[in-house]
Amino acid sequence: MNENFGTGWAATGAAVLDGATYSFGPANHAYGVLDYGRGVWPYRTTWNWGAANGTQNGRLIGLNLGGQWTDGTGATENGLCIDGRLHKISEDLEWRYDRSNWERRWHIRTPGSDRVALTFTPMIVESNHLNLLLLGTELHWALGRFSGAVVSDQGERIVIDALLGWAEEHCARW
Image 1 (cartoon, rainbow, N blue to C red):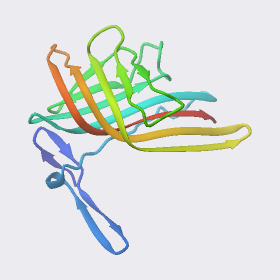
Image 2 (image 1 turned 180 degrees about the vertical axis):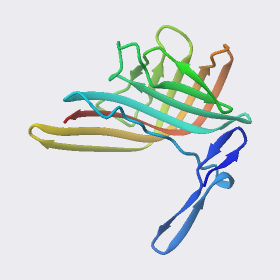
Image 3 (image 1 turned 60 degrees about the horizontal axis):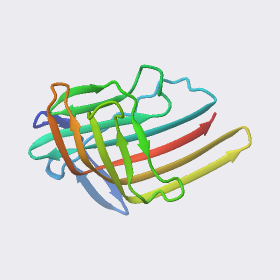
């Protein structure tokens, strides 16, 4: 069951590992993220996705940042959730990172405005590859912290300082 956590929603529940139960909820700042796909993907697809949730200076902040697969289509899945209100980022995002070293900082920004100017610093990096000739996947995923600034629909600049989240690059043939 979800319970109101300030002006947003916390995830609640428990996980059991080796007989020990670990509870999560508002007391330990647990948040939920919804990953909703369109269901039909081109045979070759590449995307970036990053997300983060938490409090910053007493404000509840959520980030959902995507790229590549929607670039140039006029439709993005980019948004900020600030104190329970969604702020749409309609611009394509520019993602810059070193594909030869996933542990280096990533940079995510809106090239035509100052709506998103973030640096992502990885703490844990995982890479997975699967090649089945016609089908395959290459995923580079990192848990880390976002820092920088975002701007609301009303023009309010919000500083982001070490907000926990993740970022990924995924290339697929399916």
